[in-house]
Image (cartoon, rainbow, N blue to C red; front, side, top):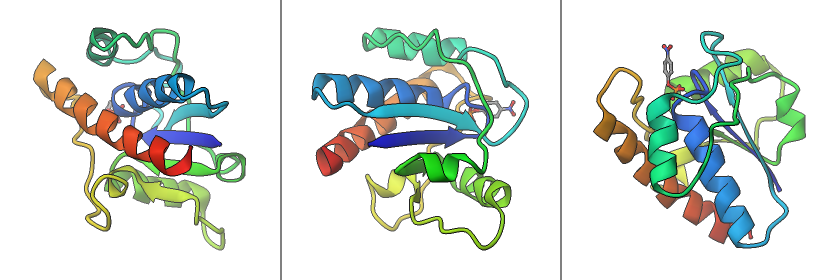
Amino acid sequence: MRILMVCLGNICRSPIAEGVMKTLAQQHHLPWEVDSAATENYHIGEPPHRLSQKVCLQHGIDISQQRARKFTKADLAKYDLIYAMATDVYKEMMAIIGPNQTTNNVHLFLNELHPNQNESVPDPYYGAEDGYQTVYNLIEATCNIIINKYK
Ligand code: 4NP
């Protein structure tokens, strides 16, 4: 299984999702390839936000080696499952992909946790530290569902 997690900056939400999903795959001895990407250019090449790194480390996950990269149209064919962390991200991804493409493998991440609700993982970037813990908890719960669904 190849899984791609996508958010706006690839420094807050999707790096946590990449770290949690990779850790769960390892724990289940699954040879899954997991990556993450951004729809926006602001933080390309940067490591994850310090508070995303901190909350992951509190759960034993080191995401310090990740670097933000842009989501591209080529990712559509490369990954089996592509998750948008929020509805605005999903719209941006569709704009990058362009018309007349099959996008059956692109899903809203939280629909795995709360089917058909079209909810977004809240953007913690402009908020306080506890927002990152809230985001981590949502991501961990959803990644557990994904692993049990596809393992
Ligand atoms: P992310 O959070 O999409 O979870 O990585 C954001 C990071 C940076 C910005 C927005 C969201 N920004 O506007 O720079």
